[in-house]
Image (cartoon, rainbow, N blue to C red; front, side):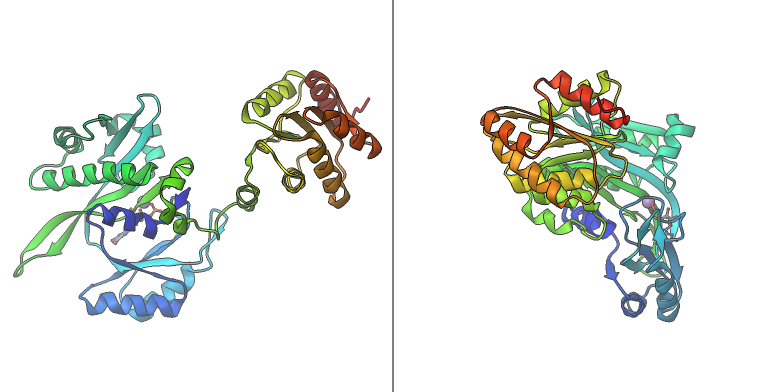
Length: 392
Ligand code: GDP
Ligand code: MN
């Protein structure tokens, strides 16, 4: 689950990281009011940033500075409602604009290869890290944390030195890098990215200017499988931006993943779903999705799943493969019949149901004139033929 910058920043703050304060606003008037708060606290300028779950907002015109509350309202009215990579901006983050000296990249990821949390840093910050990885991979430095010992100070220091940081900014960098690691662990995150991590100047005591490292941007992706351990993080789910298909699948309690093919698959069990997709491919077809309706699915789940499959206009045929155990074949058949009565689009379907209550399922399906198959090979072959418009 991706979360918005403002929410990601609150998770960084909770680990004690240096994050400039912010206010989230949803209307130009709220932007002006928020801006006024920062101007009154001494800000020279404010920054207004689109809150959308995609990167490259700056490049798309979603990050702008303003010099007065009036200008902030005007900039806010331009950013709110803006379309960034297909997403409408509904809220913005307002904060005191930082006076940036230099931008770095710092990120933590779960590195499945080494099975460790790896920290990556680059002196080429501010730009998208994928771009740096393509054009200048040598500019990205990495260290992997030890699963037991965590990210040790010397490792973080090595990383800081590699990107050119020196005293007195090295010690704060170590704290920030360890804080990123702590944020990963505390929230079961897949990714914690600060880009830019910036050196900024601030006025210190007297007229003196001090340089500090601050987290100006934050991007966090949470591991969906870890969410049950952190119920409070559910509040960060942005329903405005969730793919309606994903929201529907979550509501139905099924696993659904969109693919590019033309054959919609409905299967119970993840292993069987993968096998079914393999067979579809072997017979020359391409699956349109992975769908595991889970064990013991009721007819409403079946009907809802069918609706999801049919919502994809690329689907030309549907293959239902059920190996009844706790899932009852007749319950699935009833769901399929219910779904067909409601469906708005006529797509050919092959159904194979074996196991618990298969005989009852067969009777129901025959009565309702469904195309059936007994073996999985036969079912897959028929579905591929149907998807190519050559029903036998
Ligand atoms: P992204 O484009 O979605 O990654 O959004 P960022 O928050 O990283 O902002 C993009 C760029 O805007 C940064 O790399 C900075 O150069 C600039 N920027 C962001 N915040 C500030 C700020 O407070 N002051 C100044 N001067 N520039 C900023
Ligand atoms: Mn950024």
